[in-house]
Structures are given as C-alpha cells and as structure tokens.
Image (tube, rainbow, N blue to C red; front, side):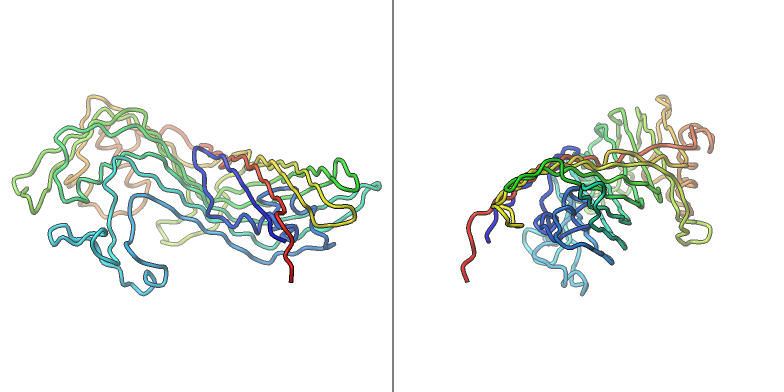
Length: 376
C-alpha cells in the first residue's frame, strides 16, 4: 500500500529531514526504530528482533562547499581549491572547493552507530510487553549563526580595521549508550490501540568540548609593511573578550593515539506514545500518530575548564610568534599559551575540573497514513 509519512522535528532551532525516517517508522524496524520512537518495537509482529550493526552519518554546513561534485569524485581526489586571482570560483567551475561569503555560517554533524542489540516479546501478568537492550555510539556537534569573519581572508581581502565578532556558543560530544527499551499497550480495541514506550539509557562520556563567548569581541586589523592587494596580510588583535571553554578527551597527545577510557557518566531517557487505527483483524494500520520526547539527560565530564577575561589586555591572534611559531603538542598546551598571553600566567585561566553537556533533546511528531492499496 502507498502511505504518506509526515514527520516534524523540533530540536535546538534546527529541522533536519535527511535521515531515513520512513525506515525507522516501519513496523518491522524493531529495535532499530526504537531509538527514533520508543514505541516502534512494539509493532513488530516477530517474537525476536536482532540488530548486528547499523550506522547513520549526517553532515551539513553552509560555509564550505564543492561545486558540481559527488562522493565518488571526492574519494578520487579530483577537487581543487578556489583561486580568486585566476577567477576560479565554485560559481564558475566544477570540482572547486570554495567558501561562503555570507555574514553568518552554521554546521551540524551527527554520527549514530547502533551496535549489537536485541528485543523480544514477553507476557507479564497477561500484559504484552516488548523488551529490548541496545548499544549505541554517538557523536553530535553543531553551531548556528556563527560570525563568518573568515569571509575576508577567503576572499583574499584585508580584514576591516575595526570589527565586532558576535557572541556565540557551541559544544560537541562523543559518547556511548547502553539502553533498555520497554513498550506496552495502554488501550486496545479491535480497530485501535494506544502504545506507550520508553528508553532508559546509561551514558558513557568519551570526548566533549564547549565554547561560550559572552561579549562581542573587538577585532582590530593592522596591515603589515608587506601587505599588498595580492598579499592582504594583517596583524589581528582581540580585546573585550569573555570566553569560557572546556574539554575532555580520550586522545593521548603524549602517545599520539586514542585510548578508550571513561571520561564522564550520565543518564538519559526517551519517552513516546503512539495511537494506531487499523481495520479489524488486520495487523497493518491505516493511520498512525506518535509523539516522542528524545534525549532528555546529560553527561558530566571530568575535564579542564578555562576562562579568558582581561579587558585591559589586547591579544595578538595572527602573526604572533609566541603562538604561530610553536609546534602544537596538545589542547592543554595551546590553552596554556593563550593564558600566558591574557594573564601572563600559563595556569591562571584554569577554573575547574569538570563540566556537563546536555543531550541533543528533541520533540518528534510523526504521522503515517495509508493513501491507497497497491494492486498487482
């Protein structure tokens, strides 16, 4: 039969439709669909359902793009960078890596790896339940309306003499989940059913980072003696900054390898309710509506917090030999160098040893309606 699937997603100011929602909504999706809607597993007519591995990756941005290209072309390395002086831009040539010139930019990254998982049907006191256990590895990061100060250098232009970099905040997290899925019917007749479900999740924090810039940072560009139209180089200075930042990671910079360790813990929960209308004695539904509140919870990380606030100190952030001439060894080393520039002390910026990052909480409203039968 033909069906109409309509999904509305509310989450942190973004709406995304690139995920394969129709598959997640299918009654046979089982434990795979329960992470999208906790009640979905209940509709699976099979007694057992097992997932080995599955993955969903999504990345979008409005800053950098490759013109007239596909994934195979990217793998083959056919892409070239834009050349302003030669007139080679994404608008005029194919396979060109170019950048947006808009005032603000955004990006969103998510990776959802569903590991070994299982669900099964069980009757308890004459009540039918669907029980499941799932493992999951997830990555999320996003930023909205970031000031695109880089548009000047990308256009091969000297930055404005005076510029205010607008306040912003962002975070990113890499974490694992061990979840319990439970779903059961709350109300049943011959033609309708109300299902409730929940996922209760233990969260294992692997990597996390956040940045909060509270003030409009004043940026001043001072052209160097070698600055020309063809070489629009300038020294950039920052003042009026009030920035809080923190990070925790499993990457061992001393050994140059990723070492899996517990960097934080947390608890999360997904809640869902579904209403189904079907014909008598027919397992296929004519109409289904579900509402799901997903990813309520947070992870508490063990990591370093830093605060950079010293209104009287102007910091050179470009062409600074104290920063540019130092080989990068670790995030902590670089933050120490910034602390030295701001306070004259490499350790003064440290303010704490833990922080929390919330899950990407979202509300999903899902409507699926049969339109017509398929006649073969």
